[in-house]
Structures are given as C-alpha cells and as structure tokens.
Length: 115
Length: 109
Image (cartoon, rainbow over all chains, first blue to last red):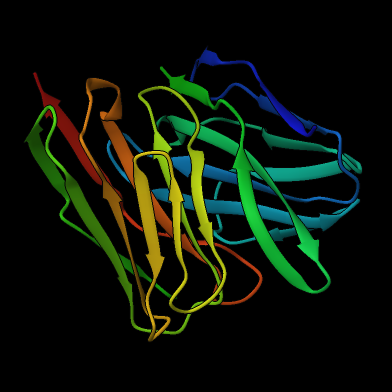
C-alpha cells in the first residue's frame, strides 16, 4: 500500500533562517506531488506541484522554493524565512489514470512557526 | 482562478443528529472529493465521486456528485463526537485540485 511521510511534524525557526521540509512517498511510481500551506482556520493554498523529477510548477510567487530530486521525494525550502511563512504545510500525492488525475492523499503536515 | 463555495461555514449539532453540507462551483468538475481534517493533522480522504449523479456511501457518510457537475453534498447520519473536524470538498476541473474553504463541524454531547 502507498504511504506518505512528511517531517518534521513541528518546527520553530527564527526569522532569516533557512528552511527544508521533506516529503517522501512509498508504494507508488511517478506520483504527482504537491505542497500546500494552510493558515490557521483557513483552506488549502497550493504552493507547488510536480509531475516528475526536476519538474516544478509554482502557483504563488513567494519566499519559498521546491525541488524534486528523486521520483518520490519532494522538498520545500527557503533561504531566509519571514514571519509570514508561519503556517501548516502539507505534502500530498496523487496518481494519474491515463490522463485523468485522481484522489490526493496528504501527509501529516508540518507546523512551522517563525519567530 | 476557480473557486469552490462550501456551506455552511460552521455548524454546531447535537450528538445523534444528521448533518448535511454542500459544495458548489461556477464551473464543471470531473471529480469531487470529500476530506476530513482533525486538528493538527493532514486531511483524510472520505469519499471520491467520479460520475454525475453518483451516490456513494462510506459507513455513516453519504456523498453525491451533482447532476449539473457543479455541486456535491455530504451527509453524515447519527453524528458522534469523533465527527468533529473540518470537512473540505475538492474538485478536479482539470489536472490540479481545487479545495473549498471547509465546513467546521462541532458536535455537542
């Protein structure tokens, strides 16, 4: 069966420090991968998605970047965190049936607090 | 971009009551998904719908894909305390998912 791992679960970082959040998927090949951010009590904002190794699409210009160095690994990074980067970050994966995207499955999330 | 509207935004119900919430879009979707999110955790997929008119159940949960393909609803029967959480609808108008803002459900004992 497929599983998704996201870490760390919580993170407190000072303003101006770098960030690296990692997400890995097991049990599937060539998944679509996503990073979302969720502000407190709000919906999900798509930050980045990837349909393959080295292929990254950005939905919202901001202080963050993403990379996909391996098929089932997705990394969210920042060189210098801002206070506004605080939030709940979620990694997700989905698969295609033919050319049709299907369900998305989420990791447990990372609570990032920038102080 | 495309948006989904969910109603109600929040609801308080008594344990044992049935719950109904819905999701609407201004454009046609090919897939409707319903998720539940507990505090501090990632959303968990409850039900996936792929055909207009499709009615699918998962235990006490029932969801339907609207015939117009622009809406979907989720019903929860005989609510229990662990039903508390935020319920998100999501749609696939194309390749990427569009999420609603969520319905926050509180269950009073």
